[in-house]
Length: 170
Image (cartoon, rainbow, N blue to C red; front, side):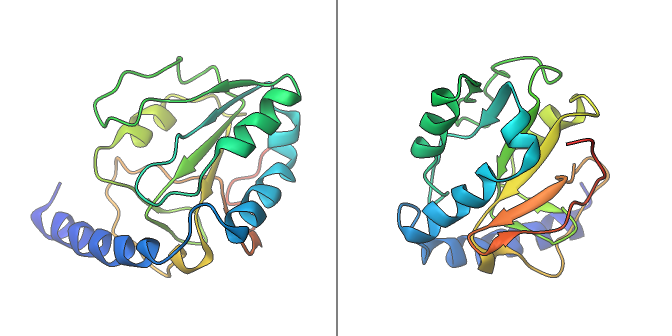
């Protein structure tokens, strides 16, 4: 990582952590966010969905996970540690719901800095849809990126779904 990009990422992480700290990860906005995620065709069609276990102000996912399981979907939840092993091979999920401190409308993502999702998403099947989720104020115009940073296919917020970034059959 170039030192300049690393510095920009650290600065942006601090800014976006402050934004996320002001959001209620369990309230009405979170319910709306997951309602929009449930409406995504790739989520409705998926047999295997990977969903994060919320940490540090991320939108609480328990009810979404329960909804997935009630439909007979297999839910994979990675461990929250940055150096955790993958819970399944990257080519297994049909959809991956990805948290982030911030996203751009075209799918750039800034996470917590461990690179776990970049490594996982790099090995996914072409048909697997990566869905970034956050609150609307976490969608920004620009994020610093490096060649190893993997973009998500779409971003979903409490205000709705952004346009698909990558054309998928889902």
